[in-house]
Length: 167
Image 1 (cartoon, rainbow, N blue to C red):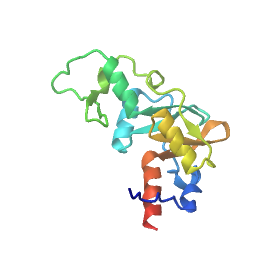
Image 2 (cartoon, rainbow, N blue to C red; image 1 turned 135 degrees about the vertical axis):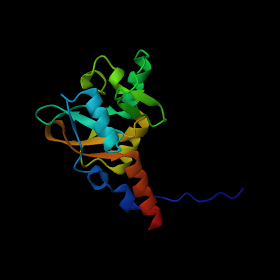
Image 3 (cartoon, rainbow, N blue to C red; image 1 turned 90 degrees about the vertical axis):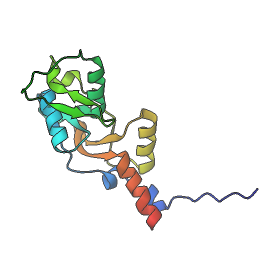
Image 4 (cartoon, rainbow, N blue to C red; image 1 turned 180 degrees about the horizontal axis):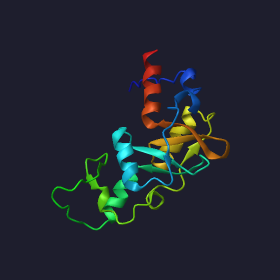
């Protein structure tokens, strides 16, 4: 039986770091932002998540579409009066979520409190392994005292692999 030899990734790809791959500056959500305001912000910017920061700019959590889906599953069903403005968030799976039906609008009750972070020097392999192990699609790149510097997504890693394949 003939086997195809395995291609090894070029060293340039494996030498890429979080700093090479990240989107920066990163859009952050202040912790005092309401859930409905955060949903409008993410939706308006076509983003699926962002770090939540305290008054000193330190990352204290992350709010993502998964958090909205979790909230949606726990909330009581309700009816919307005709003519009223409704804030809705569309999850990645196409589910429509009515944010305004939420009685408790504090972002801290819905965000992920322990976000996965990495230093700017983390390699592409390290980032990919953390994403696989944690079942996540974004890692926050932080510097001194957990201040967000950027974000690396699974799409950023795939784009780097695709570019390396083109070379």
